[in-house]
Image 1 (cartoon, rainbow, N blue to C red):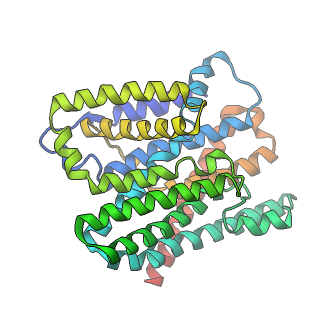
Image 2 (image 1 turned 180 degrees about the horizontal axis):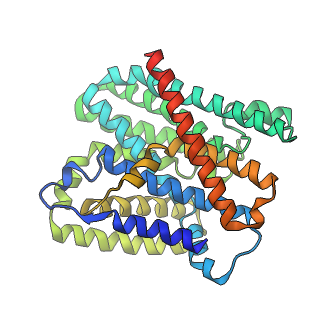
Image 3 (image 1 turned 90 degrees about the vertical axis):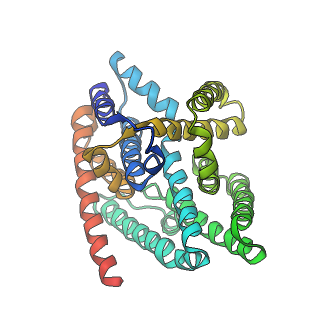
Length: 349
């Protein structure tokens, strides 16, 4: 496994370059840059999941396992950050008309894709003789349960879309301009915390189900104060001081995060801040990372299908073969799913 991990690291290193000081504001959080960052993390998500199918590791794999265990749910953080940031940026440009389009442009397309993916998983499970419990099967179509397709992420995103629309509709009814954005972000944050509590206590979901929700709100807040943040970071001295503070807080929260949920949330916040600070100075861009970033959603969903099929064939006894086959199959299915989705999307529009 360490060899594959080294390949990923080298890909990121050779894709990196120093960002020109006079143009970083135009590119560090652009769609192109975020896609490459998502490409890195979707590969890391795959690598974090695939290790669950191996019974033993050699000494050379320990650094790889240490990194995977350290990151844990942090590999999801940037997806929620960029989503919250992008939606708020669109709201700033398009106004409340954007909110009216979210149910049709974001919510329904995501829901339909997920339902199709769930049906595909169900078909494969039945084909190989795995019959799911009826209750679990029905709930899997909502994302509350899943058939191996990581439906929790879709459930969370769909709910966050709803909370986003509610929050900013209320705020724009009550006030306008920048004040409406701040009010909306406050409502969104409050509702997200309530949502987390409901998932934790009555819902009895695992921590991984809800621990990244607030990062979506962080993305929204960053969009609102983006100009001020960029002005602050434009000074090399302030950037260095911020970097050291972020590094110190990251180290402390990473060490103590298992002691309390609040510390765990602060760790995820520091991790997100660290990625943003890195991309302010370093451009991470390559066709390879961009390619995987464009496949992020189907790759996240369909890797479980490859694990399901090939673990059932006991191929995991040969770890590298299992990784290569499951990764390749995940990529192929993701490409096909993306292309078919795009065809239907064009016809629907």
